[in-house]
Amino acid sequence: MYWICFGDSAKGCLSVARHRIAPDMPKEKIIALLDDYTQGDIRNVGNRAAREDILFPWREEQDADPAWKRDYIDRHWEAFGRLDEVDEAVVWAAGGNAVEQCGLRYVVSRLHARRVPVWLAEVDEIPLGEIEEEDEWIGGAVSVVTSSRVLNFFLRFAPQPLVRRYAARVSRRGRSERAKDGRVRYSLVGEMEQGAARYFYRRRRLLTETEQGLLLTEWKRMQEENAPLRVMEAGRPRSAAIDFYDQAILVCVPEKEEAAAQTVGGALLKIDQELGNRVGDMLVFSRIRALGAAGRLEIVRDAPSYRDMTIRKIRS
Image (cartoon, rainbow, N blue to C red; front, side, top):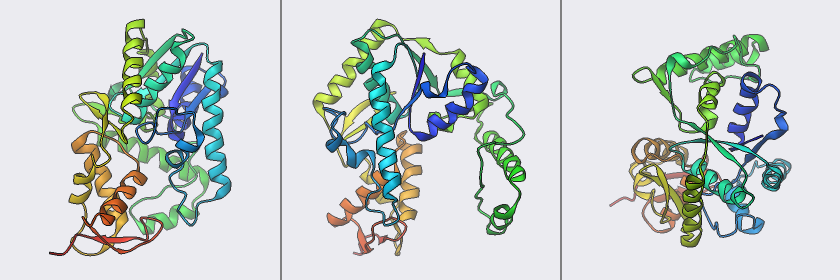
């Protein structure tokens, strides 16, 4: 049995959760695909040249570490190749997340030809009372960043056991704040607390031949359409034009000159809350560049990163 997920955060979450729910499963059997199949040419997602700009969109950043880039890309292609050794799979995916839903459809298309049994652990809502209490500290935490500069200063020099206890406290508080009507909703697997994993794992289900056939058909249709984007609509991914998110981005552009980072952050939140899609920061940044080139916003100071670029609305 293999677990398949999408992204580094999801793999980290599941690597910790397996100690509780599948302690005998080697961590090497958690396969994380890092590519984002909601963007770019998906006619052949094994084409390294065609996928590299999507797989690693931070290439223009001046502080991008070449060694980290190489390691990141290599880890994806190693995971990509290891799908051939899968004999049975549990795919972890959030129901409303386009990246994970497109990933699910690709994985099913890859395993279907070999008639590999595929289970789906769909991460969505969980009653607050079903979340198991976590440890008193988060073992993997090395630092905590808050909105308080004073607190950040003290945490920077605090002993590691104290930092890990504080991280667990922040996690529990965040969970309570996210709860609505006694339930917590996750938009991606990497958001899930380790204490919630057992709940979703118990509810995993074996995809029927009919269900796999539908997922395969949807993937093939999106491949044939090969649109620039894939987005969620009515619970399923569909093809979309490259300007699908532009209006949401433009609404967040400030009247006065500000760092593009402010617009990126605001647009990510707006797209999530109003359009029901989770997208990456670099997709939004690429659209800011395109909108600037098209004269729909003003790039006051250009820069390789959105932290250093400044923008504003076009002055009438």
